[in-house]
Image 1: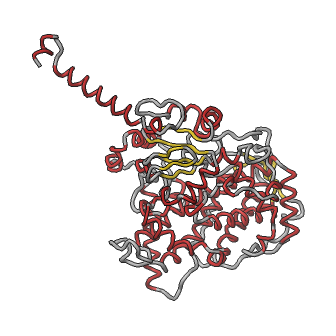
Image 2: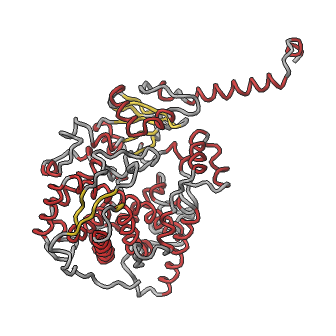
Image 3: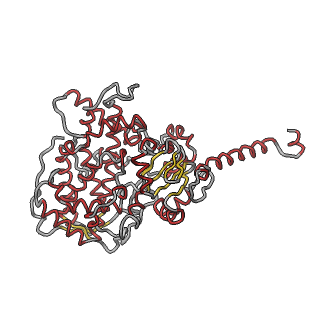
Length: 519
């Protein structure tokens, strides 16, 4: 201290400089994992990692750039979190299937992003290790074909409403933001299949189900900045939660949680009046002792039921509505495809009510949806945490790193698809390597609701294409630009406007009615 005084340096300056040096060294130390493992990639910036490049080019464009520069395996940092992007399908088979026990958890080192209000931490998508295995085993029977069949009436009713609303729009306006219609359809479908409640989102704008669904995902600048800081400095996550910063709006989550709790109580009182919806299927797997030290309990607790329903509602409507928006765009920009799809529907089922069995006959509809999801997967990235350091095909994946599957880039890789940027449903007539198509993930952790989502989109398209057709407008883009701010989702930079036209000879035909539903 005497030396500092002799040099004329106040102690407070020395202490401050020492703290800054320690922070700098700590920041540099956190960014050595990928370098030490021999994983190539762009140089990260202290604390920010590669966030600057990601924000400049967007995650999708930066993947394409790095794939060309560094090859099929390269690393990046999101803040201090080490990502390893893998385009090699043989390595991905090890990660997603063969070595699944080492890559069980989603984004293991990204728990700073798991800023979820109670009880969403108990949802299947966020569950880890033994808890995930237990939940998955209990819930898998909920989405079998036999169970989904019982939800068809809800889906058909919502799809009929969608078709009527689009037909009405066709007579009143020259341009429509089609996603608004598909959001309403998805909300109506999930309200029915999850809660057994019938709503009409197109007509009931102030319905609490509609209002809360549309505010589930916070979009404020403050919330985005806070989540960014939680990535850079994971230790502040508890403080941010105390301040009410979440990845889902807590008030909206609380609304659906309270609805689920009231329905659970009501159905317990009337056990003989069961409905075949998602909530009821989970109630049938309920046990109040689950989650209280019984790691292998075979039933769900009430809190776990509410968590699954809340996530099912929130995640389901956004993914389905965005995918249908892309499908409408494809139909408008590929009139030949639209004509072939309409002909396939008419020839295979005509005016029959869509059922689980007859929609399987429409092979071209299956190919059309698969091709749309190839070009526009609603989730452009899949991430798995590395539990223990492992070497695969000469690459070292260190413990604590996150292996990222760049779904969109794999779907558009010329190594796996001829003319990958072209829309061609007929390519699905040939056998395609399963791991090259990943819109729902792959392996044991594949999306549990894949079957239901595919059926929902098929029924929606069948009803819609019986009544209307989509056409492009002068300002309809030839190539869709993606929104770089739609973190974790693939969404257009701007919602798509299209012209909706009535199908001649169909407008006056009475649509097939569905079985009436009790609300």
